[in-house]
Image (cartoon, rainbow, N blue to C red; front, side):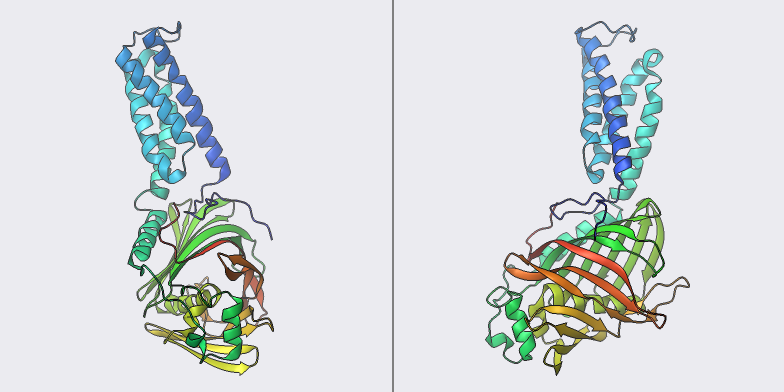
Length: 391
């Protein structure tokens, strides 16, 4: 499985949906426009004759010409969420010096109009009111509220669990390590809405809190929908679950919430717990029932919802599948959610900080018309109990 890179920071930081083409257009415009501003600086300080600029330029204004040009060049190479304040300063400074040399430099206003449009898009898509900024604020709050230290998981803690779960905890490297109370996972993959729908490349990062009556999940990913970039947010805090999609990071095309989504996301929280925080299977709000030597039914209560899933293990004690009848599929075209069997086959375990986690997986729907895979993911990075969000 291969997916086109969308701009996600390799360190596992904040996803950005801005397409590579737009980045190159922005960088090219800003660098060229910035370089042209050097002419005013050169003329002001007499470093060379500039016949294109017939009006006199003071040394003070020459420094403003230089500052505007430098700001454009710097903004050209900044991440989208940092570009807009620097780019706005560059446009303002640029227009100021253009006005003072209007007869010579008035055509630079056209470039500033284009630059301002790009700055405006960056502000809307990555500024304080964006999905990205909200996600960052809530992740920071989640991690700040997490306990400074987590108790170590011991054999005695797992003594009452089914034997295959005990084997799973040892195989996963959970024994002898601090319990997972929060985690970060960075993904790359592809997704589609239906079996016959085109695939969309995605990249994203999620942060979860595991313990407590209402564990949280904050998942932000970048996608390409019909050739256009989009930002997608899955947010589950308290009793509220939301699913939002903004095309071009601006136009909201999906805004789902309500009890159906809350129940669907509760199943996803249980799935995350099994994959990334297996010590959570021993929590008081989880009931484990052995179905046979390799299958266990986990019943999980989070706040207002109780859901269950069958966990399937290999002989080696690795989790290879998760099957639930409680997942709700949607929102469908008519806005409804439909209860549908959901499974997540897992494979290729990798060690992350001594913890063994499946690095590849799928999510499948099993409707009456026939099952199909709707998402394929590769785990790029995982961190248990992070102390701060990756920038």
